[in-house]
Image 1 (tube, one colour):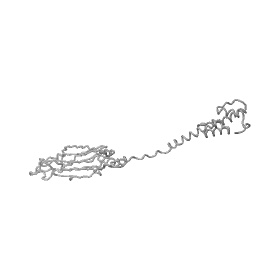
Image 2 (cartoon, helix red, strand yellow):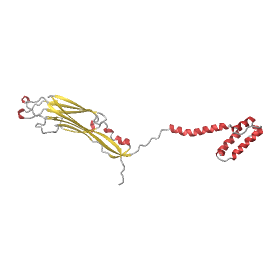
Image 3 (cartoon, one colour):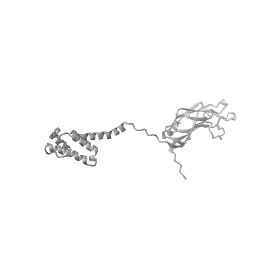
Image 4 (tube, helix red, strand yellow):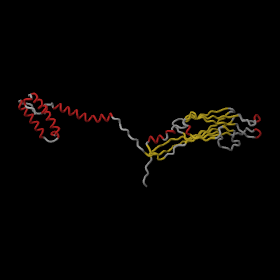
Length: 284
């Protein structure tokens, strides 16, 4: 500690006041009281008498540093030590959470829709039939069939029919390239002459081969991606043209009906995919 001559009375009183010690008396008394305080602090046990505490108080006494300034610095250091890790956590981007891998099972909910309508089509005329399938439906199967019969076109006792043509246009239909198509000829003069043939004379069948997946292992995103290709398939506007050409086998000798009564059947299957985590097998 510095000798008594290095201190002024005002400095001694100020230091003692900061330490909470009486600062009355002459210069010698003030100096001795400051020395006693330093020795007492060095002898006490516990947190206040730790090495850190003694070092701080000793530095205050020896170097005439204001105790308030020391505490202010200590508080600032503690605040920085606490705030820096929090600031770094805020600045650093969140670590990406790895998606969980599960075993997934898929089931289909299907709904059948069928519409049957009759159209009388004049000779050399075309009937256009639009079929609109809106989103978010998905179609796994589409059937388009045409049936007609004849009872009054009998030239020379021969029962015949006008030629009927059925054309299907899928330009405005979503993802039809994924369907497989089976069909009869687009045009035919065959008909149910005696009323005993219930089947369609022209038909188109569009079928979709859906993934048959059970027990797929992966993330939810990977499982959903399996069906992305088939989302919205078959939606849009299907255009069906029905055309009748005049029966000409016997020409004018035919007591012919001017046109054909054509029954058009449009049927399709809507489906929804349900995905769920597979349940672990139970012991039994």
